[in-house]
Amino acid sequence: MTGEAHVPTSLSAHALERLPAAVGQPRPRSGVAPGIVHIGPGAFHRAHQAGYTERALSDDGDDRWSIFAISPRSTGIAERLEAQDGYYSVTEMDGHRARTGVVGAISVTAAERARPGSIASAIAARTTRIVTLTVTEHGYADQDMLGRLTDGLLSRLDAHAEPLTMLACDNLRNADRVLPTALHSFARGLEPGRARALISYLAESVTFPASVVDRITPATTQADLAMVSARLGLEDLAAVVTEPYRQWVLTDEFPAGRPRWETAGVQFTADVEPAEQQKLRLLNGTHSALAYLGSLCDHPTIAAATADVRLDEFVRAMAETEVIPALNVKYGKEIGGTDYLESVLTRFANPALRHTVEQISRDGSRKIPIRLFDTIGECLALGVEPIRAITVVAAWLTFAATATSDSGTPLTVTDPLADVLADNRERVASERVLDMLATQRTHRELVHDRRFLLPLRAQLRTIERRGVTAALDDLRADLA
Ligand code: CS2
Image (cartoon, rainbow, N blue to C red; front, side, top):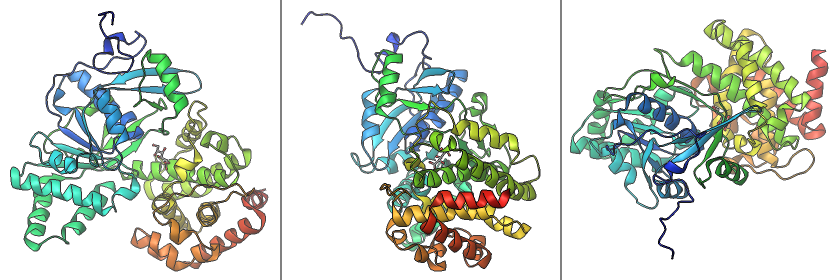
């Protein structure tokens, strides 16, 4: 030992002074208890909400709104953040530039699995005023998750019954209604006295704002970590690499207060539905299209899928002749413009992001209805045949039923309904199976509608006999 001061090699509170000048510094922390509890600090949350919060807190120095981040299932990211005192870097990249900044908004972390009860006690804490969630589309049907949230709400009610805001930040249709509906149905299974108490607390003191979130953020790779550590001069095992673009649209229903997120670019509005539908149908709908068609055509990433002229033409035609006309009927011309489509396709082509089709293809049974069924139903009502959106449903069912690309390469299918979907294609297109996907009344009508079922089965047969590229070529020939 030389007696020299220990020189940190990893990002942490002590290492901040060693960051190069080109790297954005986090704001100073005051040590005040966090006012936000976030469940699910995956790459998306770290690139999105935590980044907006960091910016808002540095603007006004109000440190009551730092984040207590809790992993509901895994332990890895919570451990990595904890080892770095919650600090991590965000690198924004496109083909032209890269910008790295360190975020310190997450001041406390825990993993539910390592410390059971963390979620409930964090929700109950008096200092907590907002609970946010990124738990994937699937998480809102997860009984363990709902049980933990309910335990937290009941403890909060017993301890002090202070008001609270609960904010779902996943790609949901009617995110403001999905969470309270799930909590209400969970509450009905409790002992009647507790159920009544919880339901009236939810009605009187808990708000559920609506939220539309957008930032394309792939899972971080080893290559990303190496690139980031060269930029920081320090190792950062919680780093995220994302695109420069970001958007967050919210209704302003925070009875217990909130950070001044508007200073960081968050848009507050009375009605998020037009923005929600534009984003879910035009961005996420085409993203899923590229993921399933791309998987069947052996493209590893979204950027590779968009570089395939056949797929690019297909998603443009789907957007222009099916998605946008349906949006325009419902919300008027200011929504779903071709400018939005162009910007989305440019973002998908970002050469700096290796966003795998495998990642986007996960949980299709939760995503496909939200992303495509409204377009299909509304096109049918309009008298437009939504053949391309239906082809995407057929591509997804083929993907989930066969787990094999057209060339015979095995594909990974991750889905809560994987067992039901892993079967012959005719059966997966049965009304009974499709009915399981229907999330809304209008979807239930759709899955029994022959104008949907017949072309769906025809596209399944074409893909089975001649492959997905033949199905796309047929559509192209029809257009010519
Ligand atoms: C993607 C989204 O994984 C997926 O299914 O479509 O996560 C998408 O990257 C984000 O919604 C972009 O904001």
